[in-house]
Length: 120
Image 1 (tube, rainbow, N blue to C red):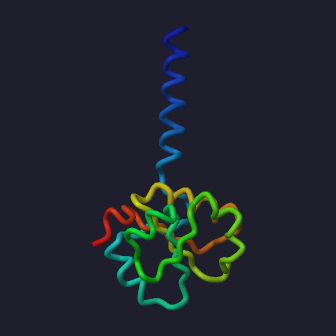
Image 2 (cartoon, one colour):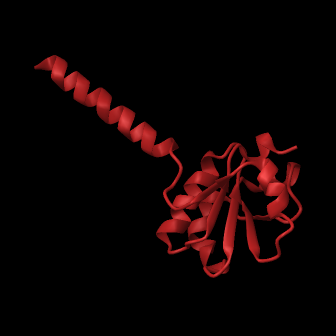
């Protein structure tokens, strides 16, 4: 019986970790190479969810900085009609940002996989 409980607990841990790292359903995932083409578009909102300090030290020109911890309150500054492209340092916080935006009713969301670490 104890072994069954251990298997169930291990299964739950794996499930929750997988949920945390898996891409958000309905969110487009692009590489930094794909981002170079996206930057030419005028109908897109580019959001960097890193901290202000991280943003100041290294940024992509068209991106607006809205740190992840502020995004929930500042999402009203974004248009739900336009696509939102989110980036962070590695892709983890931008994935969280995509989930948050999805919950707030945004439908056109793109996450940059690898984030600024992959940007060249």
